[in-house]
Image: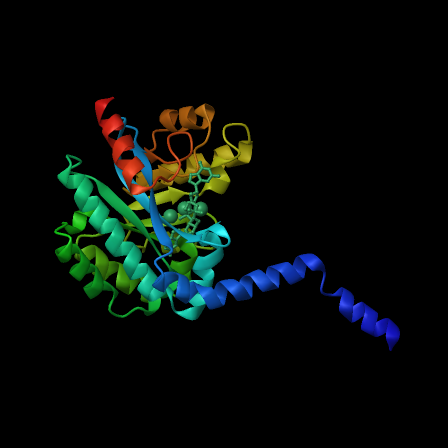
Length: 280
Ligand code: C2E
Ligand code: CA
Ligand code: CA
Ligand code: CA
């Protein structure tokens, strides 16, 4: 019995204990943090390779905790999904991002488009999604063409028919749709053909190995040619090196996004970066 007790005790290594504690603290504080306005939206420019200018930006949310510092969305978005907080949080991100976009459009970036990530729950179970979006666009005096929604392949595949229904509605409103993290999920080409989307985003996991890894090269080239054949725009995310940028210039993707150009920026720094790109 003594032995067993000891073994059971060892199941909780110090590292595990820390992870469990951290998760519990985060769960119970997520809602409080939202009420205390601890969330910030940052923006990462997307460069249009044809014009050499910033045509769009992706809104990325962060949780700036007084005790823990910046918490990555990769960590708290799943918790927000589970607890349902994603609905008010998602609406807040949408409103912030649209307000910022309106401000920047007023400052001369007339055609600026903002991309916003939608979670599985928002896409599949938030029944007032379309009316909420329409309301925010009206409130911010933005045309629907200023908005692009990034949907992950796994969210769409979770309920293909349901997702396609909502996607049709959103597109009919004039909002553009991007399929995010493309290639990491399980969608077959049969489905891809049916998705009412405008843009394919090549996932960073394939970009990482470019231009040296022959299988990444093969995958990325086939994604690009497939997207082109289907009349879709292609964006590469996670572009970090000059050689990767050269690869995408050579293979003619429409837009690139990544640390080589800019990390996600707070609103004030973004305005500055955008003006610089206009002066190029
Ligand atoms: P994602 O949509 O695939 O976003 C791209 C992630 O890659 C971002 O991480 C971005 O900061 C990072 N990134 C951009 N360029 C580079 C690069 O050159 N190198 C590297 N190593 N990383 C790069 P982030 O901001 O931590 O976001 C992680 C994920 O959290 C996002 O992945 C997205 O799925 C989710 N997320 C972020 N904001 C929101 C949001 O407002 N709503 C929802 N539902 N999900 C969000
Ligand atoms: Ca995204
Ligand atoms: Ca992505
Ligand atoms: Ca990704």
